[in-house]
Length: 257
Ligand SMILES: Nc1ncnc2c1ncn2[C@@H]1O[C@H](COP(=O)(O)OP(=O)(O)O)[C@@H](O)[C@H]1O
Ligand SMILES: [Mg+2]
Image (tube, rainbow, N blue to C red; front, side, top):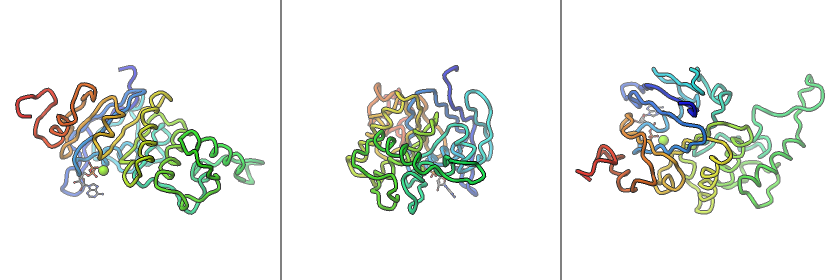
């Protein structure tokens, strides 16, 4: 398929004797928002951690823009345009907002051998990005992360993914521990991601949130993919819940629901 961005094929992953993933394949297209659903322990986080380089698969392949790639760590993933935002995103709480936005990719000024960070530039970009992700309060970019609320921290993580022009932004339960308004902010971001040229994989506990923002729903159950192409516009939440729990095998199965 020409508009394919990422394809994971036949991914297997064991933790000791527990098979967390059993021959799972997943494709994400350009400008597509995919919802990844499944009960606790279904393998959602394991799957996306393999894509983001936090874990390696026991077997299986990953293709980006149709080319086979090796993702051995998060730096590899970022190099391939994949950014991940976790529930507790990897921000360094004692550093400023601006520093966190550029962590590991700090712009330099002056002669390169001096290795001096361009603080003013980082602050300028940070100010602009914070507005873009909906932080209207005037928070100076020099504020340490530790002084921010959960939603504000999430917004900083999202701003980072946006600034570095990631092709694919993965959000694993990004709204846990967030207030109502902050959650709306994250959902708005996911909904808008498509228009700004990004693709997303969105994992959330709250199936209503997933229904609000995604184009397609994929369901994992006990490490296996059991649904790949659920259209939230054509399907009820109840049907999807039944697929998640295994009460029905597909949303077209009307016999047992
Ligand atoms: N680091 C780990 N060590 C051992 N088992 C793990 C580890 N991470 C996940 N698992 C197991 O793998 C399975 C899938 O977990 P996970 O991917 O976190 O599920 P989900 O995100 O869908 O709740 C579960 O049985 C879980 O206990
Ligand atoms: Mg998880």
